[in-house]
Length: 391
Image (cartoon, rainbow, N blue to C red):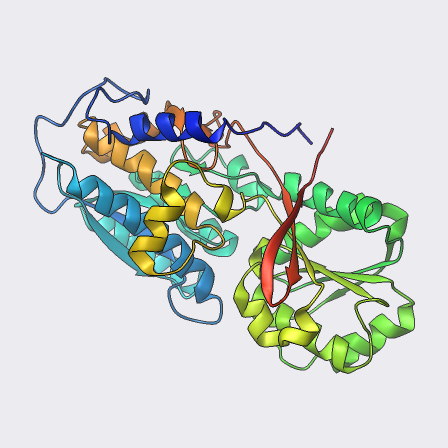
């Protein structure tokens, strides 16, 4: 795993962010096409899409992202002389079975020149080949399956590290920081959850005492909990989302597997207050989570204040990454890149500071900077524990 690259100091990051977003009124500092203070033509009805779960069991994650996207679009539209951009939602409900139809809708709307998402790895696997064929650029703030970048899709980009970074970091945190040596690894059989859990399994090596698989939508985990107890595990790693993760955690604690006996560790898909709601405050206390996402309160510039003012609450998981993804597309519009072809070229060569990191992509659409953080549930809140270093 690569070394972590630190963010710029807050003041410097804020200044760079303002320049990148064009809020200073000066020249556009982002590379990725010819610099321009505005477009020579502004098509009526111009739109970017958001593709992800806005309803359904894992909707919290999608809503967090869309809020960040909307903030970036609204700020762009308020700039003097800005080419007005509409935000078009494509609610997948986190169900990859809906992804094909939604992707066809997006490419069929010629006003849509780019999109943020897809948000989840399963829907990305289905939708991204359709976007690639149509030349519709997508910047995902949250889909982390490593294989997504290996398909040759020229329209695929993501603003956070993938699970080839998160998995080894999670394994290192479990065995090194937490000192656990008997880890029971469970996945939810999804493209994301199983992919990540398999990486963790490989990196745990002899510390992986047993594996198991559940199904998305499952609610009764009594057999799994009994097997955890019988295995003698001192910890559980769950690869999946908060809906099932919270219920699993609740049933573990109700069966007498306390946090002192069996630690619970999960991932970015479970890093949401929905985990605490599903498990209950007492059961959720002391749970650990990993995420290749920056703690929202560490985002640069005025993002935290702007987001809080807009929505009446602090940003949550992926809100800042959603904002960064949308800001790249908005910078392209500001530079006059208002066709799918031009915006795709702009994104591919983009290089400017965002609120989470320097935003730049390699030839597979992967970000040039990554970081992985560990989080912990304390007092009913998910709080940052530490950045997980890697060599």
